[in-house]
Length: 295
Ligand code: HMG
Ligand code: MG
Image 1 (spheres, rainbow, N blue to C red):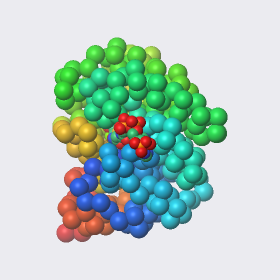
Image 2 (image 1 turned 135 degrees about the vertical axis):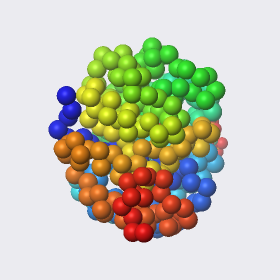
Image 3 (image 1 turned 90 degrees about the vertical axis):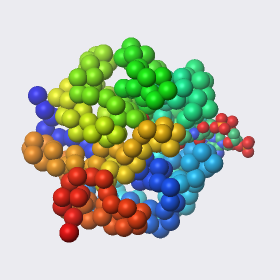
């Protein structure tokens, strides 16, 4: 049975813009965050407090939060990998962070410069201090459905890694299909292997065109939080075969058809994605944005 309401966790400003070659001016990012809130999104991942050399696109994180008007009732989580990132996030008055682990050794090394054991050792004190400071902490887990270097990733390995992150005190675990290779049956198998949808969210990249089908499979398994990026922006700079996230507009269209509440104004969001595509100098890959854009 499908849920009555879904929480859309908007990642365009972070997962989207971190992967753009162009560095988007900070004022444009602030306007983007404002437009996303205007469109009704209430969870808007704003940026990352990672090493600026690793992701130069988001090096302006502190400045962005300084100039962005944070609306009441809207969450603005940020990515934080370590205690240095947490210090920076706290200075910016952040109320929610997300740590991001890997389900595979190779990607832990490439994305975090750590082994899997070392990633847990990096996250544990970060999460502990964040919780003590009253923050909410989410966890991502990457490469849950396949890894470009290691190939298939056993479901048991994913569950073991995900449990480690949840046990640190994270309120939610977002299952990342970083390179978009997952399919609907695999999604349901993985959620079942976690013992059901409790505290799980899904984060699909649309590389193989499966993101929407995978999302429907996750909803059928009882998941009620879905990550998506406006206009289908995004990817991950440390996994070459990754392309954009599930487009928020494509998700909204499907949820509307299913009669599932989400609170987002589709036309306002399409207008925003067209505006951002103009700033990036290339059209949105979202089918719904394309279909609903002025010709
Ligand atoms: P490292 O080089 O091992 O860092 O990188 P370190 O701990 O050895 O520190 C080296 C220097 O960096 C030190 O400075 C630190 O202070 C500084 P020094 O003493 O040499 O002057 N430093 C920092 N500076 C600013 N902010 C920080 C920070 N940390 C250390 N937070 C590190 C380790 C984790 C920092 C690095 O690997 C990193 O920043 N990685 C982030 C990569 C990233 O952001 N990837 C994209 C996000 S993940 C993703 O997109 C997947 C997702 O969407 C889900 C999915 O699709 O699967 C979430
Ligand atoms: Mg991602």
